[in-house]
Image (cartoon, rainbow, N blue to C red):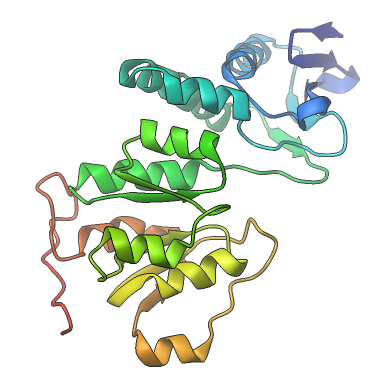
Length: 256
């Protein structure tokens, strides 16, 4: 078995190699060091003719808590160029795992968390010319959203989401809402959606399935979708399509 700062690599018999993320104290949260080590480990095992199958595992109670908050804090204080280079390294690592020519399995226990969809939505929104309002719990996550281009920030732990969105949109509400959290955050997001707006439900990280109070729909008719494939379409068709939009959509007529 070989060990790196954040990984353990165990080559078993019968051609099976196991990469174990070994940061159980922070639930195997990944940072720039782990990203580099995972990228290097997969490259080495792909080149090893004795390895036929790769298993990715995590030490401790949980498989992975997603991004390391300290890494996110560092990112929020760095330049746009630093964040861009860091994001490209992360994307390259994920791309190498996805393109791995050998069968790759994940041995998952407990939680397996992520957060990239929200950041991708921020960047897509900015690319097509939308004003992006990011909601997250805590300064570290909000700082990362700001570093990715968010125009306004709402701390869901300390602020009323609906009231802040209405204040930021002159009482109109948000034209497009992306909600991966569910629970109380989903209901607040639904209440903050503009008349005829769109809300995209892609998960329930809070552990609570999104519930739709019928009373809200009586006073705010919104389109609710549950497929990530809708994201670009929803962002592009909000009444102000941007030349950078790949779909070349026409504005959806606004309801008065």
